[in-house]
Image (cartoon, rainbow, N blue to C red; front, side, top):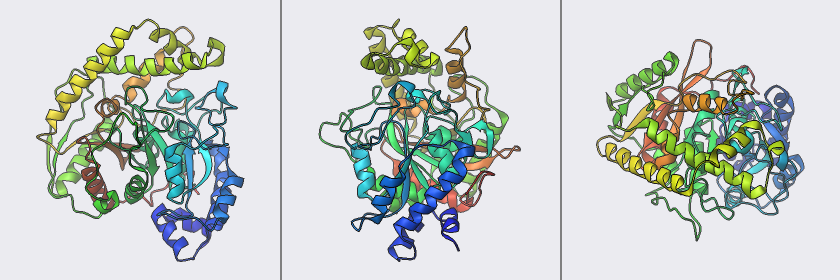
Length: 471
C-alpha cells in the first residue's frame, strides 16, 4: 500500500503506530500530506496558509516525542497562534498579522509530536456557521462543493473529511466545532469550559463561550488529543473538573446503560428540517438497540430569552475586537460592522443582565441532567446549506446572521452552560449530505460522551465513508 493509501485508511493513532514501528517516516508522511493539499485544495479551499518548510524541518527532527510523534496536523486560523506564522482570524485587515509566540495549546500540540503543515480557512472573526470570508473565499464541502462546509472551523472539517489529515484543530464559541463536523461527516467534540487553556493571550473569550479542541475521523483520536492538550495554567478564570482517568481509556470502556433523553424540537420553536428529525429519531433507535434507556424529553427553558442573551454576549465579543483594533467600516465585512453598530446600542447593564440570564438557564439545564446522562438533539436545524445562504442583504446586513441563528439553534446552549457536547456522523440524507447527531453531557463529563461515541462508532462505522472530493 502506498503512503497516500496509508493516510487514506488510517486515523492519527494508526499513523503514529506506523511511525513508531518505522514502517513510515514523519518526513514521508508530511510529504504525502503536502501532496494531498496541493491536489485537493483547489477544489476545497480548506488550507489558506501552507507551512510546508516548517513542517519538513519539524519532520526531520530526531526530538519528536509524544503520542502523535510525526503525525501531520492543521491549525485553524483563529486563536491558536504559531510564532512566526500569520494568523488572520479570517479578516482582511489582519492578513499580515504575525504572532511572535506560540499559544499554550500549540505548545501542547508540539509536545504531543504533531507536525503543523498549514492553517485552515475560517469566517471573519469566526462569526458565522459557514466558512466564506472575503479574505480567502469560501471553503467548499467535500460532499458537495456547492454547499457550505460549516463554520467557523469549516476549513479544518473539510480537510479532515477529504482525508488530507486525520485530525485538525478547531474552536467552538457557538457550535464552531460541532457545526462543521455535522456538515462534513466527521467527529467533533467541544470540551467542558476550562478543559483546555486559552493562555497565554486570553483568560476566556466572550464570557466563557469559546472552547478549543479538534475535528477528527475517529473517536479515539479526539480522546487521545484531549489527553495531550487538556489542563489549565496559572491565572485561568475557569478550571474544568479533573478527569478521573485518560479520555482514551474511556473510549475502551463500556458505557453501561445510559439514560438518554432526546428531542427534535428547537428551543426557539423554529422549524427543523425533516432530514435532521429523521437522523435524531434513527440515532435514538440505535441507542435503544445498544441497550440504553431512551425517551423523548428536554429541559424546560425559554429558548428565545436565552438566544437574546447569547446574542448580546456574542455581539459584544465581536464589537470588542473591532474596538480594540480601532477598525473602521471599510476594514471589515458588512456583517462585522453591523454587529459592531448593534452592540453599541447595548449598555454594560444589558451585558450583565445577559450574563445573569445565561447563568440562570444553565442552572435549570443542570437540574435536567440529574435525571438523564445524555441529551440527544439535531446538531443543526437543516442539512448543509448552499454557499451564500447567510450573505448579508444590502438593506439589512444582519439578515444573514438571523438566518444563521435559526440554522445553528441547538449548539450554542452548550457554550452558554459550559457543558461538553459532540456531533457524531451517523446519518446521511438522500442527497448524500451528512447530518450529525448532537449529544450533550453533564458539565465535566466528557468521559460518558467518549464511551458512548466509541460504542456508536463500532455499531455504525463512518471512517470508510468518504466524500466525492477525497484523497
